[in-house]
Image (cartoon, rainbow, N blue to C red):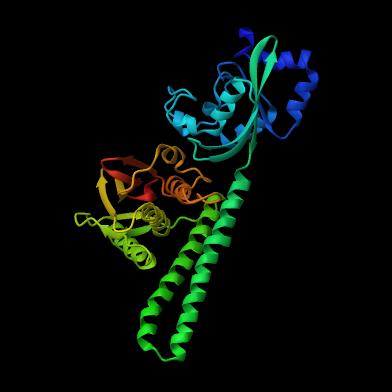
Length: 371
């Protein structure tokens, strides 16, 4: 069977000896692959060929699944799919290794591609025999739209509903205070109302911006941006809208007065999400610190918190449907990367260590108009 591994003869073999199998593979809507015992792809159907063309994926025979989907975990060209520290959390890897031992398995798999695409896939595997050699049938369904819909619904029907409920409670309190003319309580409650309204408005704008960004319909407006002032405003906004948390938001005193030319609304959304995620990951009475600097023609913005992420979270950051806050969430870090890379022409990354906590940072050009 070694002659069939890399030259496409598996297709000819199926056509000649198993025409019904070949016809089914080329007719179904699923992406069908056949993997050899080394997890290398020796056959894929036309459904994947069409999918690959749309997303600029690699269709070279003999590669492993992570390579053809251009998974960011194997981006250097030398790392082998299935051997990285993050692969043990990958649904596709779990399904494939189960099939190798004869167990049929269905898993969900999130892949962040090097070209910026984010895939949510449902994969199923089973062990098959071809001409006396063990192979695996690897079936893939793209469920990205379904996952995106679930995530958006979770935001609108859960988060926003909670905010609306909070507004109702606050308005009821105010009504009661007005009735008894308790002016001190009214003056204390009005800031809560303002905070809840700001939070609701912020969530709606964030969801709308992401929806436009995913459809590539988000307009970019380049203008002068006072980054230091923006960081101060973000810290102040989140301090005022997280009244139930004791988080110390601060901007590093040595943060230079930095002026760049970019889209202020998009940059503000990315930094707000970075800071909000840092706050949500933090314990009460801990701090979230914002800072910035320049190097050459680049600006760098950092958001630090004291919490350390575990390995599974590190492996799944920036993927659309992954969240530490429950199923159906996970738009935060995904939107940060989408907006930064596609619209600000920069990059975003993070470090998370026991000694230093977690730092998310973005790198963007000092002038977007030059790009």
